[in-house]
Image 1: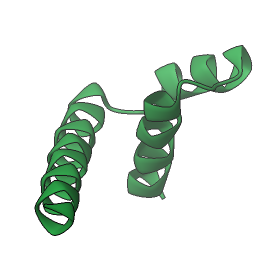
Image 2: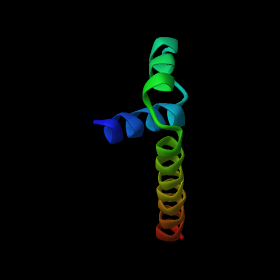
Image 3: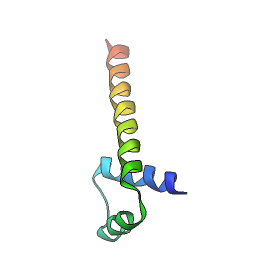
Image 4: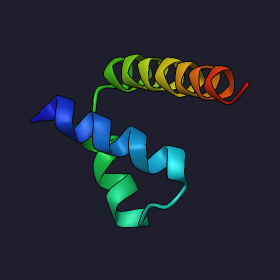
Length: 58
């Protein structure tokens, strides 16, 4: 459940939409190291997806 919560929190941060109550709840519940790890993986997937999209278009 913690991994799913971490992924959800990172996803909301990518979009930039989050309620203050949800943000405060995440601060108390989530491990910062897990958030950083999930965020790095998400960034790599995002950049890889953009590179693949550009190569497909070109």
